[in-house]
Length: 65
Picture 1 (cartoon, rainbow, N blue to C red):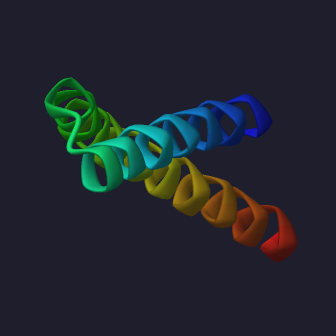
Picture 2 (tube, rainbow, N blue to C red):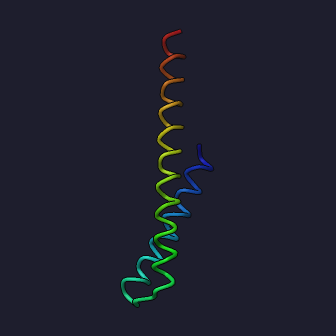
């Protein structure tokens, strides 16, 4: 889960840098990269949510035993 969080943070950093460049400097290519990263970010966030819920479910099962 730690590696998943690290990859998520890398994607967020890349999105922020490209989105800022697009907005402040009107860099068209950065806008394309930011949109692409936003789609990757959405996918990674869904994966994180799924893994987090699964981990929580496992904790509850272990607690009940």
